[in-house]
Amino acid sequence: MDEAANIWAVRSGQDDKLPSIVFGSHIDTVPNGGKYDGALGVLLALEVMTVFKENGVSTRHPLELVSFSAEEPNPFGLSTFGSRAVSGKIGWEQLKGVRDDKGQLLTEALRLAGGDPERFEHARRKPQDFAAFLEVHIEQGKRLLTRDIPIGIVTAIKGIYREEVTVKGEANHAGTTLMHDRKDALMAASEMMLALESVCMNQPADETVGTVGKITNYPNAANIIPGKVQFSLEIRGSSTEEIQQMIGEWEKRAAEVAERRGIHLERRLVLDQAPVQMNPLVRSVCTAQAEQLGYATYGLGSMAGHDAAHMAALTRAGMLFVPSLDGKSHCPEEESRLEDIEKAGNVLLHSILALDSELDG
Image (spheres, rainbow, N blue to C red):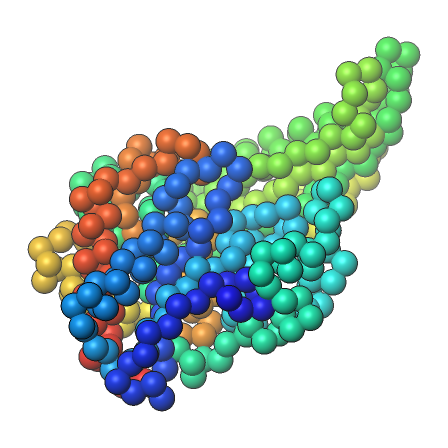
């Protein structure tokens, strides 16, 4: 376990001076989440390591299995925590003083998870450490399922923009305050949320989406006009330009609501992750291995964020998708067929061997 609470397993190669081929995913989940998201990629990586050991397979490159910590959005507002630490995109300065809604310090939670806040920077790895990174994950959508294709070759990971919006009005008595005298923070926030939906519904790119997933209302009492509301705002898209266009249009509408209702609007940037292309060589290797195994493949972009997006800053990164039944994810009904999982595991195994043979380090 490293200082960011990532779990690593290393298998020596014939030449341990060569950079490692790394594969894995994450094992944390969302509230009321399923059992496949993230964990499937770690279990398949462990299975590949086991198969190599049981069959006496020797590779030129050392191999590293990784289970990244805190990939999912968490109470501390720092998603893809472990892979961002490894890639140097988050450091000690971003940890200091951060607390969750219950007042727990992020540094305390990290220590309880097995990390080391005081030596956090030591979790950072160098580009020369790695030859390639490969992650298996469920698709979390219906594109593979509707096409009856078992293997998805991820072409790119969509950009994610996320901010915390605070709407400040005036708390007052719900019975004695006339409607035209109110500065209702919740009603204003509701208009802003619907404005986001409208902006995203009326743009041409189907895969540019917006979501409000978290809302906190103050003081949250039946007989008090809400004085403050905080909500998360998220936009995902294929390009930075698409995302910025949506933000710009929403900003105009939110400002109009704030002015008309006489409330104060505050915004705090939480995440601005640009779209990331997956490595062409890794993609071609995975496609070729799937074809040799007789499996159909389909190239598709990932609408969800993944650790591979940050590992791409260090090395050649790629992803394999497994079909999700009914396209369901982040819920208990999340499921993938065992035969599809087996095929993805075989492609992962053979792709690692092919990369080991083709890459010169």
